[in-house]
Image (cartoon, rainbow, N blue to C red; front, side):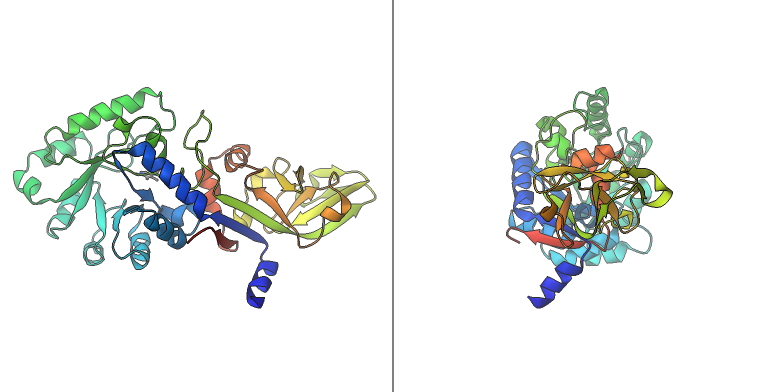
Length: 365
Ligand SMILES: *Cc1c(COP(=O)(O)O)cnc(C)c1O
């Protein structure tokens, strides 16, 4: 307990992850995806939130299929979940085939080369068709070539044929329909029937986009999967940081590097212990805000590596004390809003949260 208190007091920034909210977002996605099955994408350390507690809780909620990007992520997850299916987006690479098979990982096969690499293992795989994303997956020619190799078709054990939509975040985008049509065409001469198409956005915009297995990521973690629709998911993440020093300004001063902000007296400034090294975007200098005791206060001057400065003049004097936590992302400063102010998306804000931040979990684990 003493140790905990000390760790808390020392941490500059704290990320709190509400595992109950995560579970409710999963339930929402699962209901939206039904009758398709709902998996979970936990790549990049579960979008920065900590893959171990996140995956454990989702498993407790009944999730049995997990997606990660790399072999290293998959091996780490296998230590946490011994019985779930773990899919690896990058697929097999030379020299890693035996490791994949030994850990009972299921690679996504993205090319004919990867099909050849995996074939001899006799283990299951996912086959990825590129229908318009132009990132990974077999293109038309490769899919046709595969369709003309009956011996390979016979021996290859494909659980799902997958594709990934480029514009799922804009449900009305014409490319969604084009990609689904192309997917149907490319699959025509392949023997495997089960599909995996949709990400978070697709769960709530039509089952035809989900396939048989949904692959949601961002919605689980409370980000908005849509460009121009309200966020249907609950916030999961709160970023807070401690006030490390308070200034009562009694003469004209500038704040921070570059002296970009002038403050005249009287003003109160709070230096808060989170900076761009923790993943707080530097571009929010002069644009971001903090939240304390019912009030939003502006971030002034540039964001430093380890600190930022809030103008807390509007807050009652006794509210601003060294050691108090200030919210920087959370229910009062929505993740999507912070992302937009930083000209980016919630995905990037979450995955940039640094190793120096303390991660705290609430709710059942
Ligand atoms: C990251 C990823 C997802 C998850 O997408 P979200 O928008 O976070 O729901 C699904 N499929 C693939 C192939 C991905 O790379």
